[in-house]
Amino acid sequence: MVAYSHNMFEAELAQYYDVMRQYRDYAKECQFAHDLIQKYYPGAKHVLDIACGTGGHAIEMAQRGYDVTAIDKSQDMINIAREKAEKAGVTIDFDCIDVNDLSSIGEFQAAYCLGYTFLYMTNYADVVEFFTTVHEVLSPQGVFLLDFINGWSLIEEFHRDKFVYQHEGTTIFQFEQATLKKRERVKHIEFYYLIDHHDGNVKTVFAEEDVRIFFNDEVSMLLSSCGFGNIESFGDYAMDENADAAYIIIVAGQKAGGISKAKERD
Ligand SMILES: C[S@@+](CC[C@H](N)C(=O)[O-])C[C@H]1O[C@@H](n2cnc3c(N)ncnc32)[C@H](O)[C@@H]1O
View 1 (cartoon, rainbow, N blue to C red):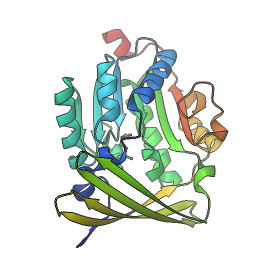
View 2: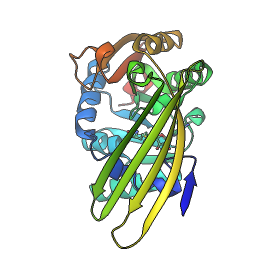
View 3: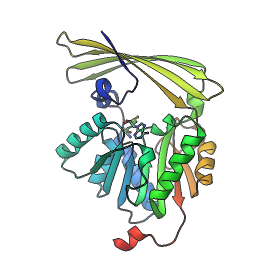
């Protein structure tokens, strides 16, 4: 049977997210995020994890002493994240909401959106709404970090690839093919999964998504036009990498302002 899933982060596929992301080094990404947050806002403690998924960053940041609020629109991903946080012995304030509904979530000294989730903002109107909302929930001098795959790595007209993931009695074969919608600068990716539980239970799932082609200077400009300053970009989670040549770009920006209410509270 072929199950159809519009979204890789719900129902059928959420439970396999960690198997397929086992190559990700959340500790390294969080050490980088921590260094950057503390550079911009020494003493920052209250952070917002936007689109937290299964909690990889939220847990690492809580283990580094941050008070973490983590949001995601998928209840399935949040459920897995909650379970993992409990096992790790950390307390995180999880909330199942859309990034566009952040307005009453509170005030934070830092916010981050990692794991290339930003690429799902497929038009400028969505990006501006997103950046403006994040700007509103930050304390004065608050810092925002996001990462995305460099547009130069996504812009080819067609690509196909296959991957095999193996974890504790489950093997997942992933075949993907992607086409470029040139005018929209959007890549449409179709995924076909064969999931084998080694007990005669084999299932197939089809999913698809649109991701935007973004470039470093373009994202910096958009942040700037939404009120962020001190914008810096980095490549591949290293402070000294050239962002334009990197596969993963991390951009940071800071909200202007005087002494923050949150800082006075602490
Ligand atoms: C690629 S995963 C990244 C998860 C996590 N940040 C990580 O790096 O492992 C993308 C996540 O974004 C969430 N997401 C996508 N669009 C969203 C939206 N509009 N509001 C909130 N969460 C969203 C999905 O449910 C999914 O958990």
